[in-house]
Length: 250
Length: 218
Image (cartoon, rainbow over all chains, first blue to last red; front, top):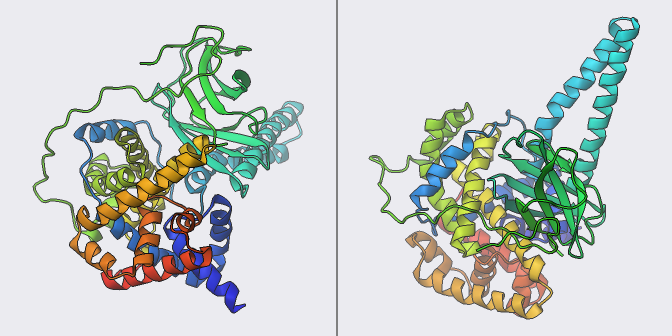
């Protein structure tokens, strides 16, 4: 028992230094809400690490500030909420933001179904409920990947300026992609996702706007995730220069 | 630099680097008042949370050097570091309303996010090339040499330098290889040819000693 306890405390330091393997990091993050001592240790160790960061401070190039200030223009802020801990913190927040409208849709569906018995109303409610269910299913897939202990995260910027994050889990054999700052595609075109499998790009679904979607196909044997602009409806093979080709961790 | 692949058959493609010219190096005009004191940043943050772009500009000035500094230290590639710094700063804008003053200072929050991102970036890049163990080993050696040198001569803060000097050799190496080098504690153990449990313990008591030396409270 004692051994176990001191082990956990030793992990608090490695956690604050981001020195844990992804699986251990997730385990420790899951343990944090139940361990007040660990939370206090982590907070103090993170504050200590921040001093180590401060000791390396240097001015970034001025152009970076202009780019960043321009960058926040199109970025919607998250509403206040109790922050979660762990590796998927920011993605979870992105999801929560998505979950808001979905929950609302579900409530609306329920409300409408009680409101009356007129056939059209019933149909409407079925439709809304179906949509909400579909959306929730998608959200479930995404949450499962993000919560997977072997989830791996990679970041990349597309040539059109969009910031993307891919989280993949071999155990779930699923990958999800989050994009922010994605410009609206030109009329008649759509963003298509690809998985690079043995040098061949396999269609992996579509991305319509900022947000998170699960990729179709097996990420386990894919070496990269690609993003191209294709004619509406998609293409069997990429027909334009990729906006993004993000290598997946082996 | 990058030739677009022939239409219809992209085959194996390369990662397209971010576009845009390299920024011109100009002296940074210092603000009249310098960065606001730490406690004032929480105030600034609450304005940022309400969408105040002017406040975000203040926040940027106060935090960007710390964020950029640690990201560069871990990633070493300046172009990538600028990209990650921008991501981190935009993330702070996005998450401003989620900042909890009771959980730590704004600076600590930003540094934690920045370090995590930098380390994720290093590890995903490493994983892509990790088939060659030699490469990984070489990087560890570089990290170790650079870190050792930086710790001695290049740290801005006299207090941090002094406190690091107060650690045992193994404590100092465990903490700096992990934090500045971006290594996992397993990699640290391997690099230092030291058993894993020893590294875990040295990391912990090293951080405790640093915390006490710097008078850090959460």
